[in-house]
Length: 402
Image 1 (cartoon, rainbow, N blue to C red):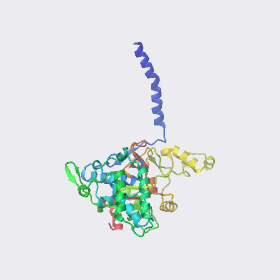
Image 2: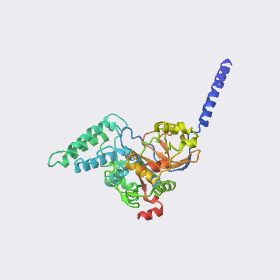
Image 3: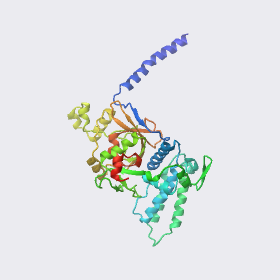
Image 4: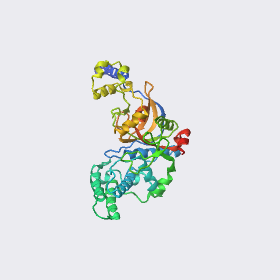
């Protein structure tokens, strides 16, 4: 009996602590409380680990969601198959340009589409897991690119009058296969035998359905142009829309059940590692938060941003404009940093809407691999994005002629 009374007293002693913690969490007005408005089914979250392959993971996630929407089937498509084929294509371009083109880990959504069309694809299980060729279980491209980049540059910048195309490609293929695994010529999946090309065809997608959208003023609207970033090395065209119509395409696509393969800038301080992204307005927040203006004006930009970040969902946001996007692109502030998958819409306790975005950093962040990115942030920081053309509003499609 005495032991029971002791345990009961101990329980009562810690209960106020539980209640206090719960009350503090509930009372924190800066912490977002999200309500889902739209959520499109997607495949599982992956981990690109120590590799610059977000373009690959996000775009294959996009195509997996497209298959899921069309057929209800769930696939895990192989990122390293795409890397193997794409890096050979990129090296070939660099050599043809005598080294006057960038060779790097990065890429674009179109790279994945190009590989799917030309080389096909295989399921994850048809190739070794990334890293297992050299004793790891996740991507680690540090040694891989330290070996491959000098090889490609040596060929591309050779002083020889001519080079042996077949020989250097065989050598490079050996490096690719050693670090990424060899792409299968045939494989069995669910009892059927496929080549990568026949497997890609079996997925039931029309590769002609996919287009890229952007918004800048240095090219005419409603026309295509190749966005001038280094990882856009294949130079595909993106349809150029005014900022409000670009925003409309994203919003209406998601509301109508289509995901969006988003490429943009996450270097902005408003993008946190905890799973939130907002287009913070360090100058506009004081009047909203009631901060002492004289003291606020005396703070550095970094100090202002920290105070704004502390306000969380109560911080003021900038409204993105066409002029802002163009200026930030031209002065290198808007950069081509990361690829992610937009698959839903949510709103916080203040009514502000966010896109639900699938990342490729495993279960990182407070929301286990999902980021909530405000609509203002997405519109301001978009470099370009891939979408099914059938998701584009009819009036905009008419203007584009697609």
